[in-house]
Image (cartoon, rainbow, N blue to C red):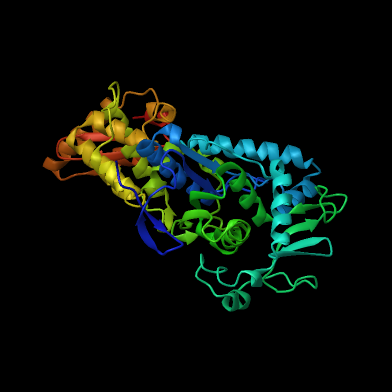
Amino acid sequence: MTTIKLHNTKTRQKEVFEPLDPQNVRMYVCGPTVYDRAHLGNARPVVVFDILFRLLRKVYGADHVTYARNFTDVDDKINARAAESGRPIGDITAETTQWFLDDMGELGALEPTHMPRATQYIPQMVAMIEDLIGKGHAYAAEGHVLFSVESWPQGYGKLSGRSIDDMIAGARVEVAPYKKNPMDFVLWKPSSDDLPGWDSPWGRGRPGWHIECSAMSLDLLGESFDIHGGGNDLMFPHHENEVAQSCCAHGEDSFAQVWMHNEMLQVEGKKMSKSLGNFFTVRDLLDQGYPGEVIRMVFLSTHYRKPMDWTDKKAREAQATLRKWRALTAGIEPAPNAAAAVLEALSDDLNTAGAVAELHKLATSGDAAELLASARMMGLLTDELGGWAAGPDVDLSEFEAQLFAARQAAMESKDFAEVDRLKTAFVDAGLEVRMSKTGVELVPGPDFDADKLEEL
């Protein structure tokens, strides 16, 4: 069997992955808070852990892998959006949940085995909170229930590598008179009449953010499971608090055995932010003409534990590569298995950049069947994502011959004015111009406009 190695945040090292039960490999990934469109950064963990899901299914069998990714559909951001818009909260969360699924589907992400909504698991959350109170790890105060960080001093902070004193000094914690310790975090909070709320032993209220994932993963995957994933921005406090709750409820060695965190995303070398004008949702890019398969390819070209820089140049290069690969594999059947080198790269802590490099080698060698099988294992070159690559129904061979002839003439006369004129016109029409000693290739980009070629 293929050996998978994964970097475990908990131990700070790469380890051989050994599932608790090879017949039931279990993974949980923190999903979105559904109040708006998913931005580009939200999509990175989706694609990263989709690759891991595919790899686990390949190695252990599709029927032996369970993947849960939640939707947080009770949150103050959702409440604020409802207040601003005047729309019912249920309508907002239903709409934005479907937006998320549609957009991630266009990136080629498989749907997880389970996609729990937080509001469907309120009784489980209440039960877990009661258990924590009974074991002395939580306390009720003024309609709130809080986890007592001091009740688990030997474990709190290990995941993120911080001491409690460091966390108090560096964290923006809510100062409240009902807290015994500034680091104590909310498990349950009261709700006013205009906010979502559920009956509980502590009055009408709603859960804190952190308890949601602990309760849902317990219900769907059990007290102990194999992998917990998410962006590294969730490591503290969200994941740290999940560990504390779950281990205090079920034992030191319970909960996730392997923790994986992807790095953040940048745009053209800068942190994505609305103030810089470089903030994009996935839908923004799709509407601008970037195919979902191209977005996926750009993501996979960087290792998940490195910051990923989205650039227009990378997107155009990915689009050109995918168009070439689709032409190479058109009309053929994929090989029975992915190339060993591709599987080896992915098994080495999801080295997607290395796997993409192996795909390039397969394309260069002309092994189209193995290229197709390997790419499809990574969610590329699938039939579902291929509509964009058919491109405009325009024969560009005449224009390619025209430019090549002009270039040949210019090599004799040393006058490249006509070559420059044609190249400028082709680029203006949205074509990428590739010239070599043996010929010219014109590759349509996302903004290709065939009407601009008529004057030529």
